[in-house]
Image (cartoon, rainbow, N blue to C red; front, side, top):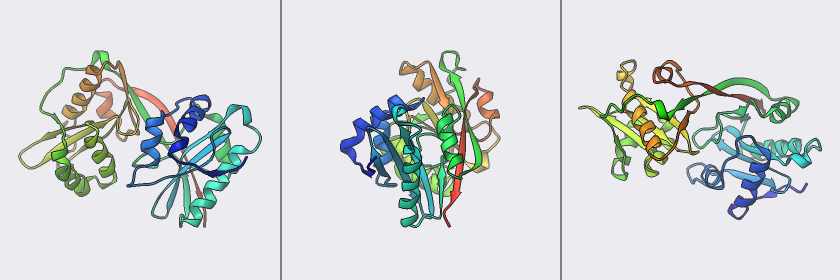
Length: 273
């Protein structure tokens, strides 16, 4: 396989590769948002007929955001070659480590889906260490608790306040909140002081909920329930019957509204130094 740099013109072919290779393939639109956001440009390399790897970098941390190998070409060293190429490219750009998963803000998965056994074995054969496990939670939208109100959909006019609020309290999620607001997917509640809580949905992938954030002085008071249920009711109004809360931290708040444990994702990391 000849590994080459890929671009927007290859998106349809990459999406087709994903569809025939992965258990949870992203769409072409989702791949475009993951690869071409100017806030965190990604590098796409490979051959869409055979295999493709997408990498991103956050300062000295490198990430494998997407890796797919056509089932017909597996067990021929394609995945190993793509991963080695990714490590070389990231190292030359200044990365001192490579992580598969946990690549906020524009991630496609929180890690390697545990159903992707071939990818897990590739990571371990390539001397990556398993460093974390992330969980999603499932919720059925047909039996939601009533919408409590007290929330609204953010608009473009809210972007300065959202950025200031998130940078102050939850800087790790600023880019996702900003993207959600631009896409009409950020529900927020307010009090006399400022924004009280937010819930984003459909940020990087359709059907995923998160991030959900509460102002630190209000943690533990149930303030996040209103925007969370507000977002879920909006998703149901769009005709959906289920949603997935992505990369959850505390489990209890979501269990209280009827969510159950769903998919698990393994995070792998290799030191390049």
